[in-house]
Image 1 (tube, rainbow, N blue to C red):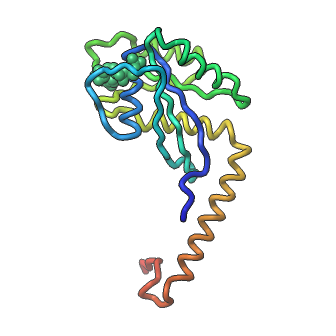
Image 2: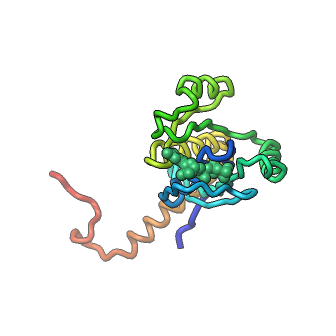
Length: 186
Ligand SMILES: Nc1nc2c(ncn2[C@@H]2O[C@H](COP(=O)(O)OP(=O)(O)OP(=O)(O)O)[C@@H](O)[C@H]2O)c(=O)[nH]1
């Protein structure tokens, strides 16, 4: 059976209560949007596998509560992330981009803040599905880049496995032009 993923990492969603962290997560993992605000209690998580540069990446996405009363719990999660030996990759997201009239933070303000912290900036909408896949994919790319050395081994293994699977598939096919997978245009 084909391996389900090559690497696994953990991603943390942090931000004030009501900014749309749970909705970003539900849009990304299940392509769903809920208009009600049910505050996250403590932390919750969902999983999603995406493929970037031929590598199957399984992401465990932790959704933290924005409400202050859960800060003692949620802080433990950021702290653990801070001590990661390879450092932490971050991006800044301004959500609810569909609500232009109710905008609280200017786009330039967001871009400036992201620049100060050396982060990429995305304006998203969980409601209209704007930049959801793009922002999660970008963060995944940053994590993969930060772990480039370990990944070279994974990439070699993945391409060897793919070559082996293709070989096995070819060997199981009966010979003859009718079964040839190549198309000739001449
Ligand atoms: N218009 C619009 N509303 C959104 C968007 N994302 C979330 N919302 C709404 O904002 C409210 C809060 O969303 P949540 O995802 O529950 O917010 P949260 O950041 O997880 O909140 P806590 O769990 O309390 O930290 C809900 O009513 C959502 O429907 C968006 O992109 N556009």
